[in-house]
Length: 419
Length: 100
Image 1 (cartoon, rainbow over the protein chains, first blue to last red):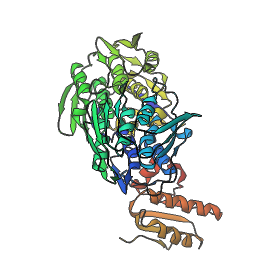
Image 2 (image 1 turned 90 degrees about the vertical axis):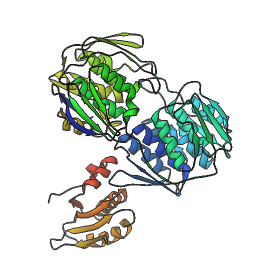
Image 3 (image 1 turned 45 degrees about the vertical axis):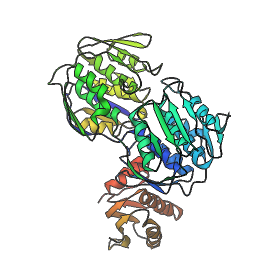
Image 4 (image 1 turned 30 degrees about the vertical axis):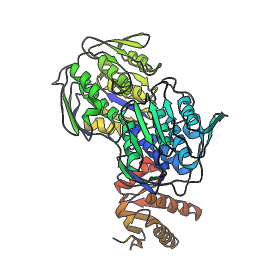
């Protein structure tokens, strides 16, 4: 397996461009199953999960072309299969997102259950219950979801817990249902809004995306469209934190500052000077060490759980003591022990990590356990004395486009070592 | 620009124009015809203007054809765009490259 070797001690400096959001591109790719005609999606990030999703669609018989600017053109005229096999779904939970579109447009779907996830329980029962409420016959057997339906019927869906993929799957299914569907306690994330934007450009009638109540008036058909995926707010936040914890200075381009309000607030608290424009963010630490901040993760627009590990990397080298409370996933502290291997002072009390900043970390061999944990270990390596070797970086390749190239362009001493 | 593949004086084949969904079918067959003539079986892509994943598929088809006929096809001058697409598809290592 590939590894990343980071030699710490360089304040990051320079510009970096942000890629399209993986968590927006994936449901949008699934949404192409809903459209008659060709859909062209631009600003698609160059990531393993994108390749997996395109492979899944291709296996169904969908026609896909990718051009040199990473625009993906999708036409479902040739679809023959309505099946998402375990061998693909087990590598990428987001494969479940084809369930709603397949059922809504083609009346049938066979999708493997995703199985367990390292960071916590993420059941799909809300997806299944919602589709049943819309009139689908859904059976779960042998690890697969078998769903059949004539035209889905609108329903009032009240989600017990806020679920992004649940909101997305049910929203997509409702676009072709008969009548108006309400999704209450809906996820409010920007990626849900982006998916709604894409669906509306196909001819859907969705209102309220971005709030906890989404209304979808079903239509007879959706048409192909051209749509640009929004920038990745977590990639944005990660590079901002990288500059902050190294005491550096950075200009982030091709992003949307309002998507990272909660992150920018915390970075300002840590001592960063931040300016924003329409599609850029600048951060300057003026060579100073950051100050610890207290973080409490929660669904959007609160502080994102996907930035928790990165801020832990900041807190462990910051001045003072900071607490990080994780309320979204019950097992999202797997990076703590790896950081402790590097000399971090972290104490866990339930779902709270108490971080006492140390002046320097020490480079060490560490192992990535999930996407954001792996990013946090790379960040920690940027401020560690000596070399940090991050193993199992296939995790990081799922969510960060060319991370070693982007960090190297900012002055980091980082290299990928092939297996 | 019209897409074409032609025999060069050094025996290599040169592709020009666009290597995209709309052009690959014709290029495939012309390429096979030229590969069957023998020679170094090097395909130069320096003059390719635009490409998409259908172009990548074409290269893989030529490689496959060579394997079926017991000769090795390799490429020269791969466009950056094509390499990006190959990277997205985890296919970079499948493309044998010779230097200019």
